[in-house]
Length: 142
Image (tube, rainbow, N blue to C red):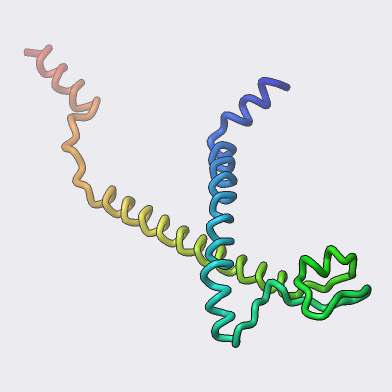
């Protein structure tokens, strides 16, 4: 069982997946910053100063008027945090778009490499085995 596990871990797909997960985790921090620090302020500017991250509805419990989402949660109220959901959707759309662009670039690079490989002139081939044997036979007859 241990040898099977070693074989599984040593396969290229598992290593590629591990690298993808690590890069994905780092990429999430970048996208979170992009959304929180760059896109949210632009959306807030366009929408008249609306900040989606603190938008919520109180379902049950007492929350002081104008309290932040964090303060409402700390008060123990049942909260419907639709602003957080909107931000999660925006994060997803940005990540999906960037991954789409990355895959598109990788596919373009693969296609270009394949075309170069096809266009490369073939090296002159040597004589076949039959041709060599025929030459040896002729030489032996002489």
